[in-house]
Image (cartoon, rainbow, N blue to C red; front, side, top):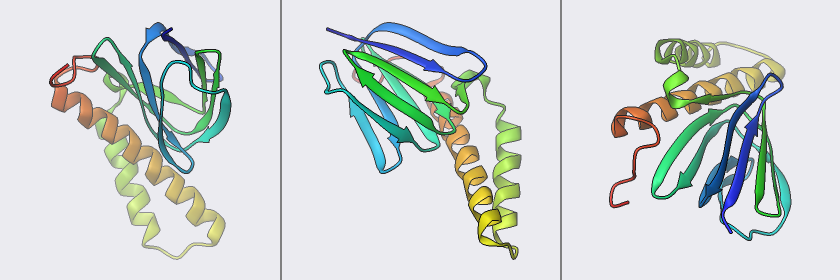
Length: 146
């Protein structure tokens, strides 16, 4: 039985799809993959990319963290923010990355460093998703050999 996947933010339903074969997400302790008939669980997400694989095609989205729940072949991602690859403003993401890297070189207290590092991770995730789209030509196109 294939997976049903929903990605939601506080503002909107960003993605909804049935018949998904696999979902790969950035967990707080590293990347993980979910296939149909996976045991129920809930975990936190780190900033990164969520890859949704259906019929050999892969769609990639950037998320900035949140929660991931699996139950009865249904996945719900409650994301702080989520963007499809074609929605990412590369120049803005690159500027945010540069600014965070510059700020890391300055003196800050621990709370500021945590915020700056989180900003850097978010920018890097957005850029990674945008670059992946560029390599494929278009998000959702089949993977090589797929």
